[in-house]
Image (cartoon, rainbow, N blue to C red):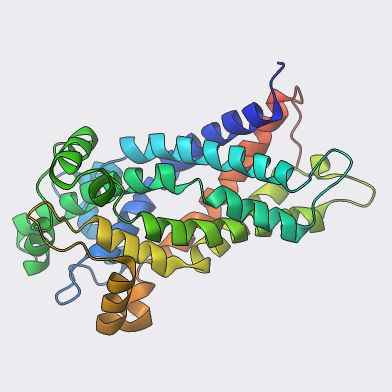
Length: 315
């Protein structure tokens, strides 16, 4: 198959994005519900309680997959753009077959790729967050767990599905103040996050290359380990930005209310809950990220080998 390297990166990223999102979406649902619940009267005590309450709702286990169509397509597009952008950033920094970049330069290329991610991530995650929180808020209100469900449901109107979220958000809140709400928070997460993500992965791979060998000699065990460490690093780099983004995106301005900014939301969360509030949901997120991001790199590297005509992928 005569494809350019950037096309192979795009295809491999798309494949990896599909596989990992199909597996980790339930963890993401729990993360968003913990981040966006009422601070004064929280619905969930912890991640396990959130999981139990969500599964015990009328929709059952399927409620963990509420809103997956948008992030599934988004994950495919996000990873395609990330790996494509990473490839081009490495080329811009001078990588050639004869000249390999340093680990610092590879991390810098990752940060550069992170600038592209919000183009896809911001609207996709807004749709996902609103559907996830709406589902939980409705269930909470129905069983009268507490006032938190009704309060959360009041943040924005009821949506029929992903397309309806997009249509109603554009109609009532506009493109930049609506669909791209939380874009600066997403950017603040993606740039340092992908700097750490690619930097960590490349560092692990570099240290695992056998003497006299190359990166091409590495197997799935190394890619899984590198990806797992990269995923934990990504979400630890600036997790509060994701908490801020989730709060902003689930706050509607359709009725003319003031749009909360990134710094204003950050300060509000810190004032009410401290550091703990900014890192709410971090544990379940890292638990999801380690195997999930490990799988991203395993699928990406394996797809790369297939596209290059190499069918052996040994441990």
